[in-house]
Length: 233
Image (cartoon, rainbow, N blue to C red; front, top):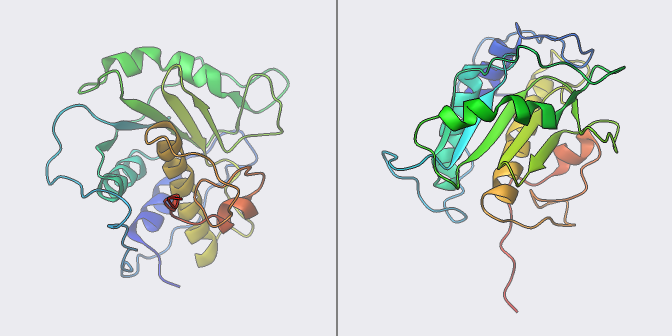
């Protein structure tokens, strides 16, 4: 099975990134094979400009346990797909960020709180710029209404966090598992952009990228990679 360049980069760079969470074990690194042709989405999204100018639409901000190179590559890929300016940054410092009492989970709200200064100081932003944080930490809301969350969104601060902590399958060293990790991270990032930036509504169709509710890895794997247009009546 062939792997995309993003899948290889993701595994190579995440292999050295670990936390105390049992869900974030390092992955083996594979020799990079030729990259397959990507699926065209030209009919779904406007074409991206050759050179982006003006405010950044979406910043992808890796925490210090997630690869900067991977965040940058995802930004480039999604800029082309969505016709937006999606830009990765260097990793954000997390000194003082602690798991919730009695758990190994981090509150998404705490991540947003710690990132306030970072968001204010990033260049080329405006009032519509959205910020997505990428992490290998296991996350939940402070209320802990669920056992865990793959992602969390806050419209007020224009923030989302996508966690890869529960996206690592067993066994982790097969080509198929590596491809699954790539697909899961990108799908959840695309969902955040679709919902929070493009105003896409959630769907009950599992073939739709915006299917909800997502309760397991199986749900993410069965998601379609597109958000079909709603037919006009």
